[in-house]
Length: 150
Image (cartoon, rainbow, N blue to C red):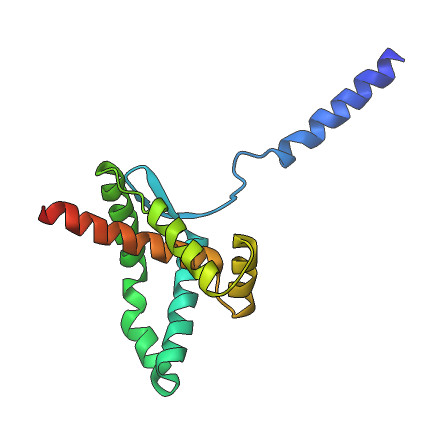
């Protein structure tokens, strides 16, 4: 019985290293901004958003718009991280304003809950998380400007 148990333990240990391999890439990091990271998937997502926005703005010249702004995608992601960090340093998160804005939208649309608002956004093809992130960035930027002006 002990030999069987030892064999099973050795078999499990033999299989375990490939499963827990240290060189398994979960998410590729393409930039580090102080204590924050920008991943390949965030970068690709931003490029896809750029393509969608260009297609909505000017379908005939969408490719030209994308190629003109494509080189700025990573720089924009870095700027966003720096802006959020600066906001945190100043005690500005944008969370309160975001909650107020979302609740106001929910009331205007006569929806029962935030989940209903999220479903409505997804139904219109809008990523709710992207919308929240953009709103938060905008609010942090505006509050930071006010703080620096005062």
